[in-house]
Image 1 (cartoon, rainbow, N blue to C red):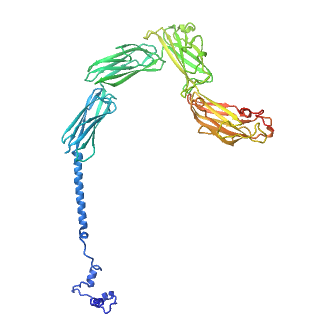
Image 2: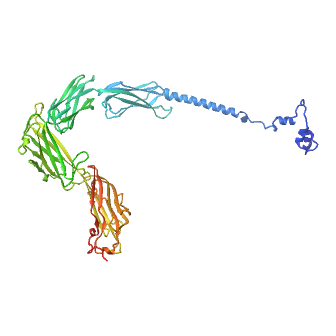
Image 3: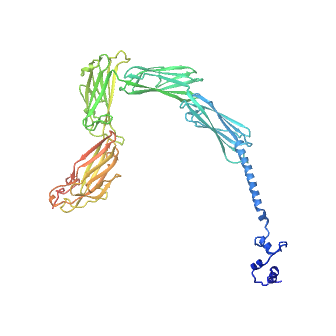
Length: 639
């Protein structure tokens, strides 16, 4: 049967070309009839599509298989995670650190570290260590800051314990934290790698085992005998041997006696049992100006297991009170002035005038008084010192006055005063040999003493002291030079006739050089204006970070250097600036010299005496040219 006959049979069409849609509209189907396999009803019931090919196994069940695999993987990961968690956390190892909650500084104690293998595997090469805080030491070896301990392999359930004997001698009344570490591996066949545990314990360190207490006067007179009592006691429950008390005594303290006797500057107590105490007594005198202070200190060292540890230190500060025989020094240098704090200022080549005034504030007459004044410093000239009514010893740089020339010193009534005078010249130059040679001073230390002592004072003599320092200010040297032919290879070449000629420009170079003596200077600036008819060419050279600049409207040249260190231009190269100017003489100037640079102003700040300094340099012109072998009348304009 042909395809056309088949279509006619199925659709009842009379022609193969009749549209299928028309046949569908003209055909009706009985509801009770069963649809044919190829009928329109079955075709549209299936969505208007010809049935698909049968599904494969993977297409039907692939989603179910993939879901099952994912579920199995999740369960496997869970089992592995639980296994790792149990293996490495809850059942691997435990590290514990114990120590007394509170100890005394200087008393040894034990820090115990316990390491327990709670896993089901053998721990290989376990290693313990204890890190010590600052101020704590390991008694068997005080050089170690971390104490290590290697152990044998730990089987499951085994315990390793190590006791560390330590001592805390640092700052008392604080908490020290001791940290323990344990590192280990599992045996072969288990998981590889090194694992670590960490734990710590805090220990409160209280007062030192050996307490000390100072007893000293708050104030004393210069030269007055006084005592300092240093009481000590072993407040711990252990004995100490060879406890040393090391004293720190000021230079102006003279030790007259001690109990027990000092060996050098220390005392050693051979045995100090629990509760035992004692006292170290010092007797001596302090010398110093009224209002000054002196500190006497003591450090306690203990011996533990053959090692010496600094346990604690204490001190007493004593003020020197105004003496009944008061002494004061005043000084001045002409043109020197004073600093903001009142310190006198002097400069090289000046003469310092000193006045020493003494007063009897005691209730009795003071006899046979001797006054001495000692000078120190590298800038005073001992050969020119002049002492009025006294004597100067140039070998010791000490001036002396006695009652033989000053009547008031022979016998000074209560409330009476007197004074002496001396003159000290300064050297004309600074003694500079190295960079540190700066900030020079001249110091006078004076002492006045009488063998007469008021009844309420325990001393061998009545003594008064005074001191005064004079600051020597620095100096900033400025040198200006003019050249018709530039002598330095700085890339500047001067042109023009010498002598200068009417209508022809002649170029000159101006050199500015600075040198700092005796002090550092800040805010350093050099300014000047050019002479009439002189022009700025723009050619400039300098060996500093700044170069001169020019303001054409004001004809001002400015060189802002900023800071200059002491010794520059003295023992190191000088800060230098070079600039070129030009002058075209006019007919009326024939036979005359002319000005190239008007007066120069130099300003700076002396950082030692904290004062501004200024310097003015005269104008310079054609007559000041520094070239050698100049022709006759080099400075005058020719036709």
